[in-house]
Length: 199
Image: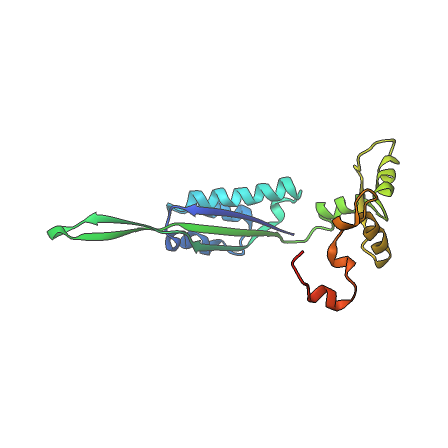
């Protein structure tokens, strides 16, 4: 199972950040953290925080083990660049490029777990196809007289058999004929294409 995290608008040039990130691909998470602590670069602290954020996502959201995680992919892209000016000799001006970086990381399990948390949640739900809104309300009230659908999900079918029921619901009893959809009143293909005036 893959877990993603990203660090955007890091105020350092991509070349300097890549010098730190290139040595972390395919390395265990614990070993990568130890390697960063012994590296003397300015981009170490933001990258270390990014790895800790990805590990926290894996532990809290997906219930994975830290010992079973490694860095599958880490890449550094260039972010927006700010252009400034500085004074030089003889009244000239030189440009300053303040570059930024976007860092993306994907961590994955060494040995895939048998069942993820999302698959367990889907297995707990009971799915039933209903034909109308009244059936859905009755199905929701079956569970101990509660009106909510805590452990049950309801899906509405879109079969051709239900087209008559949907079309009948559009025509209200109190509406006059002049308020109905005028394109449905005209018969034949000529009445739908060639119209004397716009509806």
